[in-house]
Amino acid sequence: MTRFIDSEQLAQLLETIGLTAFLQQLADRIEQDFKRWPMFEKCPRLASHSPIGVIELMPASDGMLYGFKYVNGHPRNARLGLPTVMAFGALAEVETGYPLLLTELTLATALRTAATSVVAARALTRPDSRSMALIGCGAQAEFQALAFHHLMDIRELRIFDIDPRAMDKLQHNLADRRELRLIRCASTAEAVAGSDIVTTVTADKRLATIITPSMVEPGMHLNALGGDCPGKTELDAGVLTQARVFAEYAPQTRIEGDIQQLSPDFPVTELWQLLTGAAEGRQSPRDITVFDSVGFAVEDFSTLCLIRELAERLGIGRHIPLVPELENPKNLFALTRSQRTAAA
Image 1 (cartoon, rainbow, N blue to C red):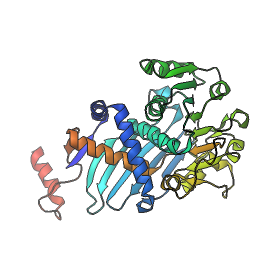
Image 2 (image 1 turned 90 degrees about the horizontal axis):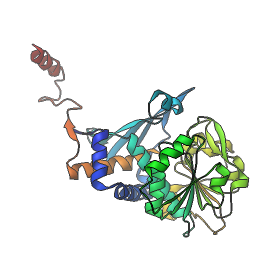
Image 3 (image 1 turned 60 degrees about the horizontal axis):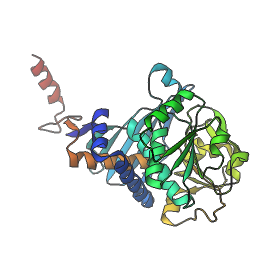
Image 4 (image 1 turned 90 degrees about the vertical axis):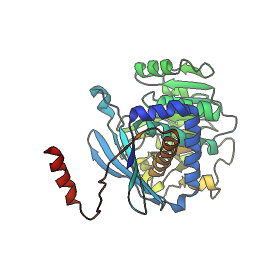
């Protein structure tokens, strides 16, 4: 039987574990998996683009387990009362192909994106970083804010969104985090000024310029999360050319990330190289670093594995007959007969 976890059951798991503890465990799991990067079978995600959005499949396998995520990105969905991003995923054993887990991943995707941001930032930011600008206050914003606050001791959050209601929502949801100082800004430039870390997580499906070179100060680390498909960017090319740039999986990021604006030979270091010590990160306190993150399937694999382990330990979710359970595995036709008998 396959363990099935719906959105309410995942919320129950998070409430039982605690959001901060889950983020910490997930960040650690993602870092561990990136450190064993060569073990994974991986490829750029399979994307089906339309003028108003994208639907993607994201597979990864470590040779023992196989995981995939179905995910969409439709910026106009909010007008329809739907999330911009919706996702579910599955985990199967490689030896038999049997599906072990089917789970919601909409909420989990926001959590894994925040956890991955922290994994990169822990390796790239200055140790004294305490302030972060958050540009874009949509569905991802609270998770980024809490991950950086609790896991990296960010104490000041400077926020800006072109939609004032999005900032209202973020301030309301974080009102009980009194140790995190929120500063509402009137522009991107105001939010970025003096910040140690800049996180951009906007949703418009276009070649946008959210951050320009004049906004960037020596020593900053930029977490560029919103440029995640062809024709969608957030950073001016001049920001990238003055920085040391890091990505999850360069072949995918060159298609979908901010570096799609640059030549194919522009130097990019992959995150696993940084985490294993195969490549250097920040070399000086004045270095500008960019994590050009588009999300990669190994992160979802880590998330699926953690959800499965925690759900089994806590007894959360239910078992469903996702695939047939047969007395004779070669007699699939018997299943149709039993259904007719039951109907009669």
